[in-house]
Image: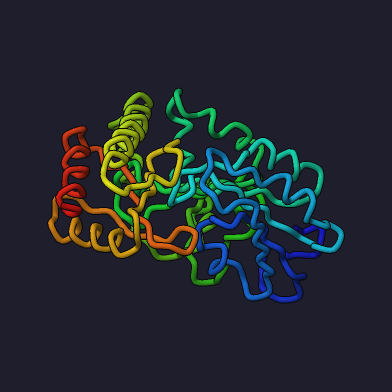
Length: 301
């Protein structure tokens, strides 16, 4: 981006930035970039298929010379379906163009910890930056997100701030203020460290794989209910489903939520209401999954 005249500090005299993403990406690219960002959505697939292939669309639709500095945002674990972009193909498309490749892995980056799932992330190591959440699978407080940046100098330059009243330790190896956008915050890293220390590699892998198995079990059970359609291939820990008509879908969800047996959120898919199950709690058991299916059966009765 600096090659296009984009300064790593300050907000003035910078060219327009193009952000490219697939249609089902999380909403944060729409609210996060600065006002002079042109956010270009590439509608490569509206279906939640096994792996949304966006790279070919980018190759045919992106004129780099006309675009200027560009961020390509790929997904690892879309929030409704758990779907993964073909990260290797996206990296191939971006390689040599000067664009910045970012992987949104709020859920899916944790698949790297599980031997049975890490193939979904093939190619992600070629990105320039990655983001994930600890408040999902690590079950730490809600506001805990993690960002990684391959070039540390670019990361630090974009976040650091200098002021005469800032007290700095001249002997510090790493000043936290240089690496995050927040200057006042609690020590979020401590519960993350504690969770990782307690679980260990095998514990994180087990938690991820167990959650995904629970999602598959729920999908199998809910498919047997009258009028139920599971809308995604369950590749991670999300199940997206709806019933025969919109009124039944919203009514069944409201009844289950009000009953307190299980809780999951409503969403919208292809312009219609749907229900989104996301399994990430370490306390969830197979019995809990079966009770959730039974709760929907009762709501439909």
